[in-house]
Length: 265
Ligand code: HPA
Image 1: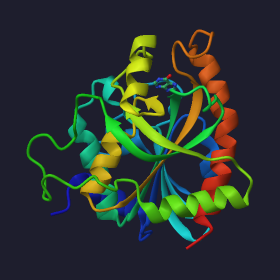
Image 2 (image 1 turned 60 degrees about the horizontal axis):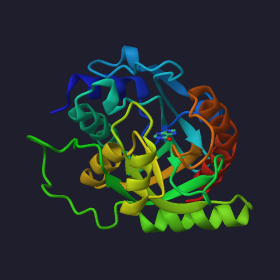
Image 3 (image 1 turned 135 degrees about the vertical axis):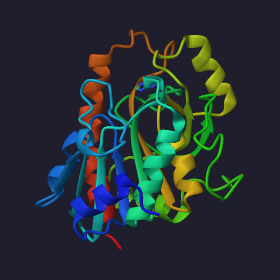
């Protein structure tokens, strides 16, 4: 049965069937300018939708064509550190699936856990570690149960993205993303621990979204914009304004890569 949210979205989309959803992390705010005549739906208008509480996160859904694809961009996401029930993330992913989305792309800002992965780099997520202590699949949820996560980040999409990056001469690292619940940045001891776990970058989002996308049988891809070196690896203090500036610059490169990605089948 279609719920109120789905009915509302289908009505607004007016026959537009998205195949790709992209969650735009900080720094990618103007990516939607690539869409001609987008359908814009503020989260505030969507029945039962979570409203982001963080300043600078716009909170709206933009639907339109980019390249060869019908795309839904989510400008602004909800983070678990906002106090949101993780089930909310599952509901949002399920709505996207019900609208027709088959490919789910998450972008985010993250801290580097390696000095050879400097601020301003882009990292394709090859795998993740859920260190949030939370999981959107806890409790009653639709089948499948115990979803397989052995290749959570779709290999074909990753290879395509790597090939485009190489062709376009944009360095694209590959690594493991670990999710910390936040909202504080890590301590140097936590950064050392995460490195010893085998992670390359740390952030406060994406993992619950990818879990729900894999659960919903979508092809998932994730890319991190490295905003800063993790605490203790550089000599600066971690300052949110610096993070925003670095991310905005590297975000341009990521926007370009995503645009080229969408120009392919
Ligand atoms: N840690 C966690 N999340 C982040 C960081 C960080 O250093 N930088 C940007 N998002």
